[in-house]
Image (cartoon, rainbow over all chains, first blue to last red; front, side, top):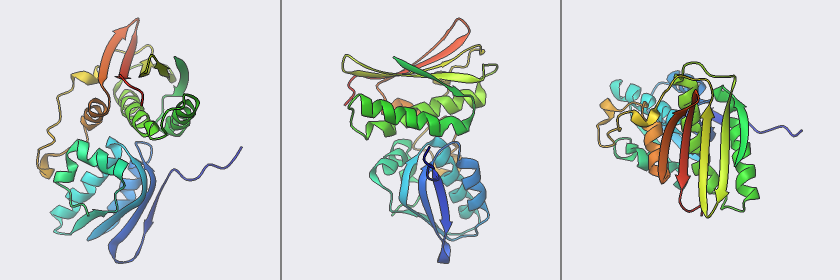
Length: 100
Length: 135
């Protein structure tokens, strides 16, 4: 049996840039939120490698944005692919979360 | 319909995703169809795992491509009725302060598919999602 790749990964880089890759689903959401909660703002989430997001993943993004908003820190999502971007649009979150 | 049981745990999602990808490839459907199917199944599966009372160790996930239509059926045996379609609609125009993750999953299912139907029969919660055209 082949080793399966990690289904989701967060890489914390310099200057508040965080790279999300793989699938941010209900199985990964708690760990993703715990990782993001440990980071002070401002944050830029680079979603170039993010292949999939569900409502559980959207919940992680909303919670992180609300936390930073309350702290007066900037937050932004960049490099959303068309499929993941569509999930944000269908949920209406593209209208309230800074993207791009 | 191809039906397979999956453990009542969120970490079953990887196995469900593989099941969907096999189905999409076998039926010759566009690969991007897998995204919508996986999202719809995850939302319904996670709802049952989190909220259904009772239940066996596994839930059945069924997929069918017939007559040009696509059907997903989630069957959760030996549970009390829990109808996620009765949840209030989310307000997608609400400001960020009022946004919650709750209810968003069913909203996404409704947006992505043509029909979502709930039934409780012989002790089982049965969620059926259909797309009139598979492509």
